[in-house]
Image (cartoon, rainbow over the protein chains, first blue to last red):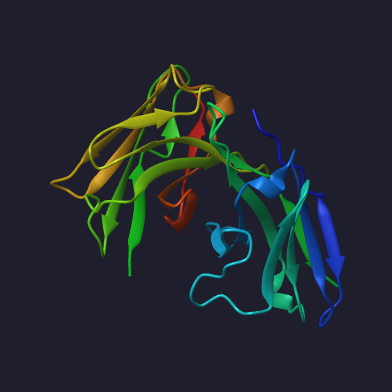
Length: 109
Length: 118
């Protein structure tokens, strides 16, 4: 089945930019979605279809996808952005079509 | 605003069957264009998709769980359910229900912790 690899952790100072990568074979040919999960809470969709934001998600959250890497970028990081982030794709060629990344813990210093 | 709420047994004995229900409010489970999924997360670990059901009743399951999983829908109650048989400690997790649209999950329930223990 398709594998999505994320760095376990990313640390960033307030006001700086956090970049979270999601690696997968030719992931640029797929649509990538990103979820934010705070402790004890359900995941929340923050980016879908590589770079679109759901209503209510700040413009500080943006996404890109090319080649073998998709990236979620959080600009002007705030303390409230501290959370786990998961990428997700739908792999049409797999018998396990909904694949989540391994997750990245973002720590705001 | 669509809301999903999981309910069910929080403690299940090994070898028994886990049963959960997801009640949907603020929208109809019979609306076209969506599927309804179960996703789980073991303590301290990542997300695992379990399976989905369409309002028509058609289902698709994660092959690694397929032999033990049944997802059903009750359109009259606007809810769908999960049964996972022959559970072991490895099935201990927070179980989420979620709505899928265009291959991503836009609404999630709050999640419910199910512990498998004697």
